[in-house]
Image 1 (cartoon, rainbow, N blue to C red):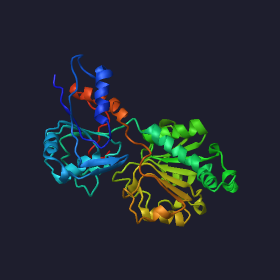
Image 2 (tube, rainbow, N blue to C red):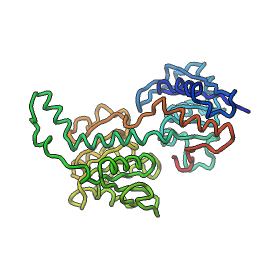
Image 3 (cartoon, rainbow, N blue to C red):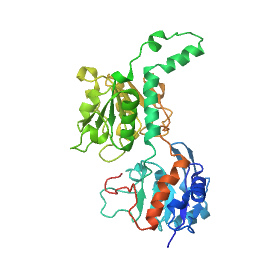
Image 4 (cartoon, rainbow, N blue to C red):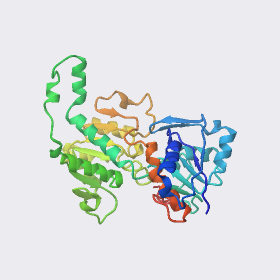
Amino acid sequence: RHMPTVTVFSSIPDVAASLLSACSSGGKEYSTRDDESISLDIVKDDALGGYGGTVAFDPSSLLPASRTALSRAEILISEPSVVAALLRHDPSCLDNLKWCQSTYAGVDPLFAEASGIINTTTPHPPPWTLTRFAGCFGPPIAEWTLARIIERERSFSASARDQSAKLWAGSREEVTRYRYLSSLTLSILGCGDIGGCIARAAAVAFGMRTVGYGKTGGRSGADVGVDVYTTDLDEALREGDYVVSVLPSTVETRGLLSGEALAPAAKENGGKSPVFLNVGRGDVIDEGSIVSALDRGYLSAAILDVFEVEPLPLDSCLWNRDDVVVSPHVSGLTQASDVPRVFLENYKRYVEGKELNYVVDWSKGY
């Protein structure tokens, strides 16, 4: 039975070590026979670096040995932005590739117009399979989202300022007046695995009312784990005290919240001028639209973990706004320890000729 070598080229520390550990200690459940093991080709090159959700990669600086290793890869574990950069630099560099396992949930760098790698309208998609890294990000992103909501409602930043100034309840108007989360509504834009996890955390732990927005009709709130499900974006925006976007980057979602899209959220339009959180993709709204929505009262604040351009440019006005919180794309990071569970199950399916889990649809971009 063919047990293909797995090529690992990732900016995430210890991915290969985590795979090796899983295979040696508990990986027999993923093998087709007791005497079979997975061979790894670990590509390390100074051209690839980064931290958290930020990747730094210069394909033109790759060592010849690294190019050779990547050119013979049948199965590759890597970041979507790395694969996009490789193919943009040399379209033939992955000619033997049959399956790429993304280390991220989002694969939009491969579909970005600027990359020119994959066009969802092309009649001839790439000859290899791409699988998302899924099933791991819901809990950490839900933790981040609820932590940010609680931080704002309980004015933790004001308490920190008081401590620095040695003031006991110096910001008493902020730290003593707060709302119970159970009195608030959280609108969730995007009702997939991550959105559902956020909804459960908000509802079960804190009693928040949840409204879910998605484009698929014929579903109920119970179907997606929210109190109310709607395909009407305006309704979701009006209902929320907090609005969190978990939307992926696709042709349909890019710029979805830009321009006057957030106007229905304004108090003068029947909304609550909510706090907007973005943990999905930054290109659902451009920076100018965020600033305009804040200035015009559509939003009362923005808590952002993703941006249209990352890292956020030094000249961005978002850095200096009191009504904006900037977070460096860290709400849900791939942990090396998560990789074996997702990848090894798919590797077993690949060897056995079965359909893989979390396969990206080239025609949809996700």
